[in-house]
Amino acid sequence: MRRTVLTSDGLELAVVEFGGQGPPILLLHGLMGRATTWWPVAQWLTGYGRVLGVDARGHGRSDARGPWTTGRMTADAAELLADVGPGVVIGHSMGGLHGLVLAARHPELVRALVVEDMGVDFRGRSVEEARAWFGALSQPFASLAAVRQTFGRPRPEFGDYMAECVEERSDGYHLLAGVEHAIGIAAEWAERDHWDAVASVRCPVLLIEAEESVAPPGQMAQMAGRMAVARHVLVQGTGHLVHAGDPAAYRSVVEQFMTSHM
Image 1 (cartoon, rainbow, N blue to C red):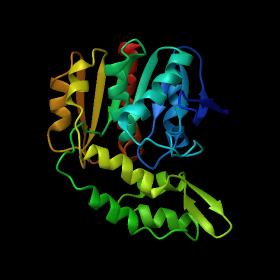
Image 2 (cartoon, helix red, strand yellow):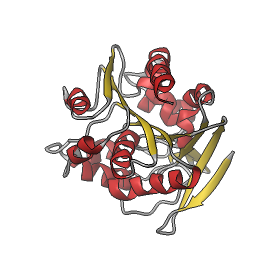
Image 3 (cartoon, one colour):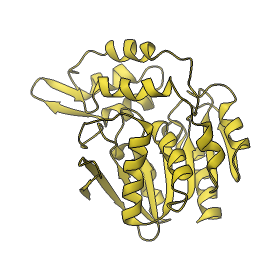
Image 4 (cartoon, one colour):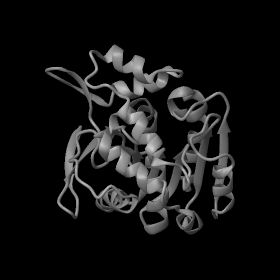
């Protein structure tokens, strides 16, 4: 089921209710993604509670209006949880960062947190690299097969993921998230860190790192060491999309965590 919620700054966010009963489990997607990319994971998570996902502002079917900051996008998630009740937050990449900051700023809303392949300190990286990469994308795409081909090298799961993040128009397939908006989000990551949030998290945390991680080497283990109750797991043979690259390994560690902390 899909519905919309209105944020405190007047923006409509698209929310997907995946099903399940009990305490909320909020799924937060990565940059350029959308809530429905979580569908395979959400199916088994419904055994643990009420699973819902939100399209971040500027993504999926949510309104596209800034500010494109971690603070504002975290506030969007906090407002949603304040409405449905405290729960477990599971985030991938950008969503993992938002979940971490959410847990730090609103401990009353987050009972436990899963962060998949995301760091908190990318200072020194050039946002121009992201601009060049996104700028090289030639839209529209002629077909969903073309989307999968463009994004699926060298890992096919990226192609399947991005095929979920486009819409068909009269001239072909277009990304649902605006490239300039994504660049704006990434620009903040290159300018500031969130180590202060790491130190403030008090709920149980599971940090899942890909072998080919986007996080700086050793950073996720360091994050775990600065948290009150945290476990760091490195999943061998995976790229950034751990939950899609090795679904069985991802499910195993998350279910162990959920069983222990729900």
